[in-house]
Image (cartoon, rainbow over all chains, first blue to last red; front, side, top):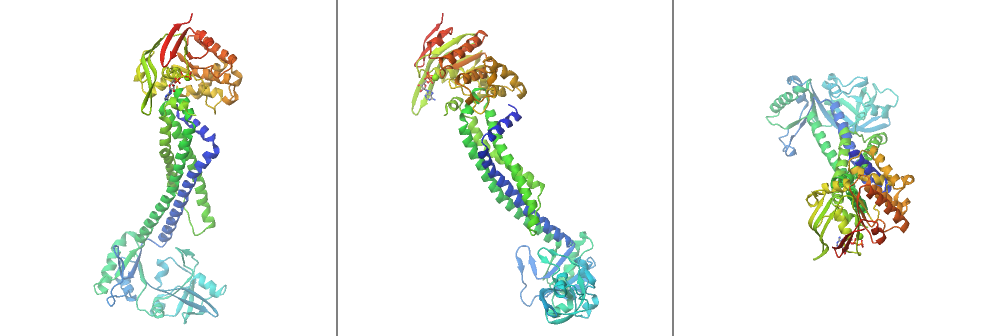
Length: 402
Length: 225
Ligand SMILES: Nc1ncnc2c1ncn2[C@@H]1O[C@H](COP(=O)(O)OP(=O)(O)OP(=O)(O)O)[C@@H](O)[C@H]1O
Ligand SMILES: [Mg+2]
């Protein structure tokens, strides 16, 4: 009995009981759909985050005070022994660590910014001129913080787009005086519109000179220092150089942490990879349940068609012919269910981002191939037992079966 | 063509053994037309199933065309059933979802005849049994006699050398029965060896040999004059 023939017989059997076949397939359809959907959401999140982080530059180094270790998490240094990162640290890095092109000091806080009777709570970043270049954020009008502003602790502010829109509307804010946490600041620039990245609205922020920021937040330390190397290959060597320099400046203690953008990216990627696998696995369980449904129906079908099996055997069907017939029937059920499930799953995955913008999805070829392979495998796995049961029946007993 | 030597068949029912056939020895020559008779429960169907390679004897030896059947595997038995033996059942045993034509084609599926060639072989046989106009009918759309004729066509489709019929006319009225018998004896004239089970002495009278079975033993085996 050839392959095509087996398929035809299987199809006829499936079509002869449409409702039952449909319901059996539904289990597989839902399972496959869930796999495709959840994996595409997981993959989507990963692609999105990877893209956003890569956009920040993989040559980026982030230096924070305090020591984190891979084994024990974050250990706040014992009181008194902490030396915060300082503006002078960043200056030293800029001057002496020749492998890095920038060392941008950053202080960070939140506060109210007011113009006339309008006010807004926003993020305040104190930094230097290089910030603009390192983070690829540029002014739309006016100028960014200058080195002169930093040196003279000038009370100048650059507004993020959203802050400008909220406080000034159409009016040009350049040269206007605003209040940043009750201190008077002169607006010198407005940032270009940038949008949201990783849940943070980059337009909802204001920039002031780092020195003014330290005064505003009443601190002599820094939130972090951003450094970048011109070439990606230099990252590892740059880390060593920064470490050497800072350890010497910090009384021979390594009380700071250097993270690379690449490492953060890798960690994020692997966390999201695990998440995707877990989601896929959960969906896979529903596919398994669908497979059990197939086995159940196949067992019923074998029982119902006992006589048919007897007749076919009496007319010369070998055990393997009967076996093939039922396995192919199970595979057809699961395979067709799989294809329908893939179709629905992919459709939904493609439609979701149109309505839910925070949920990016990526339909990957491997998830489709995997879902289909898995659904066919389910058919084989859950089809074998009923098929064997059918094939091993004694022809005489089968013919007698009522 | 066929030789049975000391065939017995025992069924195990719980702790009890029921012997259905005892010490059956039998010789069948090519071209014979044999009637098997005997009371209900005497083991006629059991004997036919063994002859038709559907069932294996508990002991004894069965030679079919020089091959010893008990040494064959399940697959080899299936192949013998498929190509050497045609079986006609009392209850027709047609596949209900298939048309008459498709039913006749079923044995060809398992002998590897390609799909497009099957109809060429099945259709003439249905014509021969007088069902030219009923080929596309499902079994439920046919009378008992017509169904039995489909079953005969199916039994003949692989040109078997032996045709076994277990009460082929048992479920039919006398005129349909006669038609079936006419077809069978015609086939016999063309050289097909036929063994049939019947309760009807008139049917048996048309055969050239009559075997009487009682309590699982052959009690009489005579040539019909
Ligand atoms: N699977 C089985 N298990 C136990 N006993 C069986 C089995 N099959 C048949 N028998 C017994 O074997 C005996 C012979 O049965 P068989 O069907 O061969 O009789 P028969 O001569 O064909 O009768 P009938 O004329 O009524 O068809 C019966 O007593 C029956 O109960
Ligand atoms: Mg009987």
